[in-house]
Image (cartoon, rainbow, N blue to C red; front, side):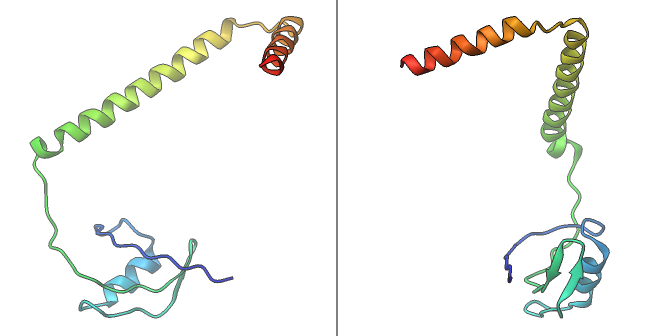
Length: 111
């Protein structure tokens, strides 16, 4: 089976697995193509499109993204904690669950 994919992405050093990064570093000018390389993700042939200089964004530029990520992580942690707290006090009544399921199926069948 042959699997092919095309990706156009910029990434900094240390972001890709070592064999991929080593093959990419060996390419020096746009248009050059690597030999096939194997990583734990499969086989790859890399074509260098362009290199961009390393840039650093200011805190003010990344602050909205960092705040959104932090809020999302905090909300996720709070949801997990709430579910864990609730699950400690839950009891399951088999008869009630079966009755509810039966009523639900009957209601769906009636539609």
